[in-house]
View 1 (cartoon, rainbow, N blue to C red):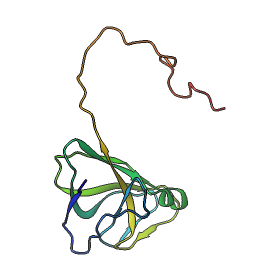
View 2: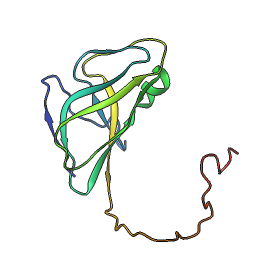
View 3: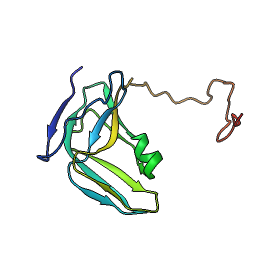
Length: 141
């Protein structure tokens, strides 16, 4: 499958897989930026992507940024019809500022097929083992 992208910022980097077999493509920040502690920001990546029809782009954290530096993305969905610049909502949950340099990895995108669902209103749903068990219903052991 081809994934077309367009540079909007001259220093933008091409999305890439870090290793053969990786599920997510790395996306990069196109300009230097400091995300201050406790700050939330929408960060433009300097690229637009053409997701093929029948697919969606799902944004996920880079585990190293989350685990080691306390940076958390808002995640995101990129629909196949969207042609604008990709932005990442990011917050710094650590107690120190974090500096990005142009070209640093900031988030990853998974390109996934999406089925179209037929929506049916009903009075009852089928039974399941879980039923209406919500948060914590499966226990922690």
